[in-house]
Image (cartoon, rainbow, N blue to C red):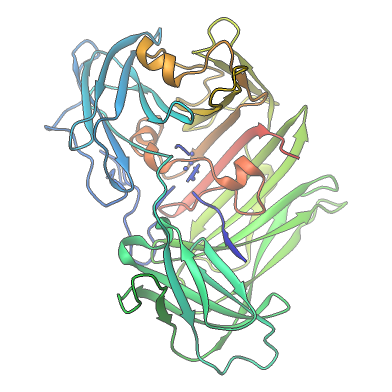
Length: 484
């Protein structure tokens, strides 16, 4: 049985806060999220700096300067991708281009613009829009449809596991598998095998509770295996005992339904365990416990999320904190953002430009950006090919009405929703606030690392927030379609 959990939001999916924040920095291993002009430089997933074609100082509001979009597919530049530059106020098409061999498309704008990148096929369109870009911006957009072949490994460990061991769990970041004996094969998704090296953890368990472990912080994949066989990964060393790490949940009343997640960040990857909880009659605090692995990590992330279902929507609120504290971290639910209370979609007037509206149960005055994800389907009566499409939009924070921009007719007829489209009743809406991000300008520059997690979109029992790239906190409030 194999699982891949917490695939990056922020990982904010097609934008992942995987959200998927993609690669994370820890004790010195992998590319980190950074921002032009801030404490953090924008980098592509392959580590390439995303810089303008020439140095650009902040232009005057009435001076035209280039906005550059970099399309990425599998960590490499994607050529011949359609990019649409739209009017900031009306959403009307200003210019449409295709990316060059370097994956770039640029257009001179005055004041600001919306940019939309068209990925996918006519049967599975994936549109990604970044609103309110400014002259001089360089923004990267990752093709959410790209799926690379997994890396197969065969993991072994020393024989002298504790005699009480009943099973093993093997983890490489978010990729994991369970087995009653070793060696065991594990398929690694691309995000689990960064540049051919990765940390690996083997945990001996008694009835699925960790009791001992062996680990390797940076295994370099060899070519020892035959081309059609899994590459051997022999984790050496001696078995060490696990310990207990705790998260204190404060303010969880008797109707609270939530989860807590503890992550050890190693080699740019988060090793995460999640447990569910129900609140206490007196509001707590209550304690959630996890197996820890002494000496494996020096950076840790603690997250508490609460969930509710209201009017056909699943509501999430999450608070995550990352730092060097390994244990006994307290999270107060009172510090979370207010819940979203209403979400709706209106496509009657213009199906190709759906409008999403939302509001919270109380005013929200903080936030760095908002992500909207609209889903639609089509089932032609003539038996033609069915369509399942998604449109992900990143917008400035506190935008309570978000309208999709226009596409040129030739693209709209193939990739945009139309009068026969059936929209998902509740679009996904995610508002995020990060302590390490000064504001929306920096967030949109790193939007290629800001994606909705699979846990949020599909109600998985996994971390709702992404792995943070630097120390700090993340708060999000979200609504999506209730799937059960």
